[in-house]
Length: 150
Image (tube, rainbow, N blue to C red; front, top):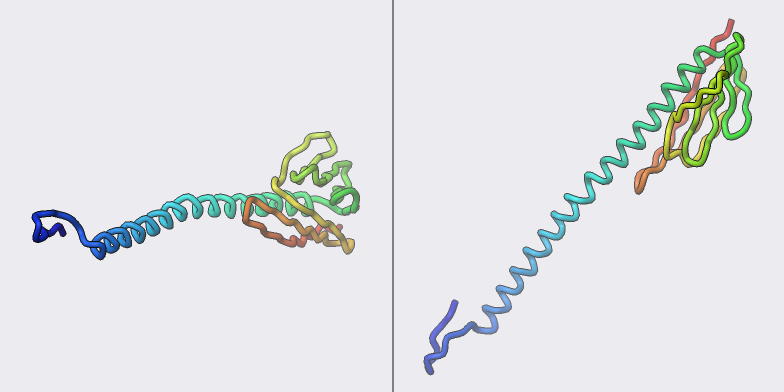
C-alpha cells in the first residue's frame, strides 16, 4: 500500500486510509453484534426456561391437590382445596411466590415470579390462571382442575 513519491517520501493515499477505516468499522460492528447475541440469547433462554418451569410446577401441584379434593373454596388470592377427610390445601400469592399451605401448616413455594393468580370454580372444576414474568419473558396459562366427586 505504500508508495514512493517522486520526492522519496513513503505514505498512504487518502483513499487507502478511508478503505482501511471502513473495513475496521465493519469488523467492529460485526464483532459487537456477535458479542451482544452471545450475551443476550442465553439470558433470554434462561428466563424462558424459568417461566416454563414455574408454570409446569404450579400445574403439577394444582392437579395433584385438585384430584384429591371434593371441594374448592375461593378466598384470598386463590383459595382452598378441601379433601373431605380433614385435609386442606390453601393456595395464596405471597409477593411473587405462589405458596401452598397444607392443613398441618407446612408451606411449599409452588411457583416463583408469579405476577397474578386468579382462581374460580363451577363446583366440580377449578379454573386457575397464572401469569409469570422473568425479565423480558412473560407467559400466562389457565389450568382446569377436575376435583374428585363421590
